[in-house]
Image 1 (tube, rainbow, N blue to C red):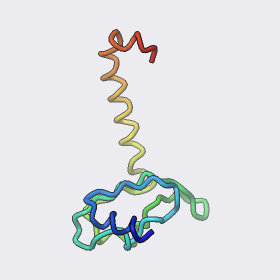
Image 2 (image 1 turned 60 degrees about the vertical axis):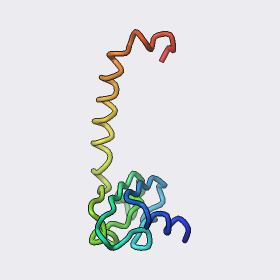
Image 3 (image 1 turned 90 degrees about the vertical axis):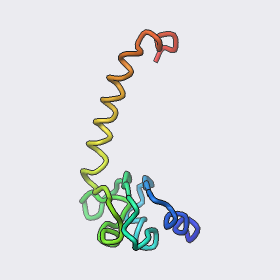
Image 4 (image 1 turned 45 degrees about the vertical axis):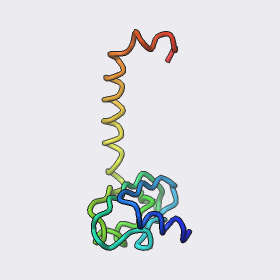
Length: 99
C-alpha cells in the first residue's frame, strides 16, 4: 500500500475506481492543493452512498475532487451520449464490423 500511496502523491490526477469505501485518504495526496481527485468508486455506509475517497480527509489538500454521489455519474452519461452521436456519423464505415 505504501508504494501506491507514494505514486499517488507524485501524480497530478488520481482516479479511484476500486469500490473500496474511503480507500483514498490524506496519505495518498500532497498538501499543496494542486492535485485533482476523480472518485469513480461506489459503496455504502449505513445505507448511504459513498465513494473510494474520504472527502473530509483530502478536501483541503487538493485543487478539486468529484463527490459521490453526483460527481462522475452525470458527466459519464453525457460523454456516452456525445460518443454515440459522434459514432452515428460513422455508421456506414462501421457496418462491416457489426457493432
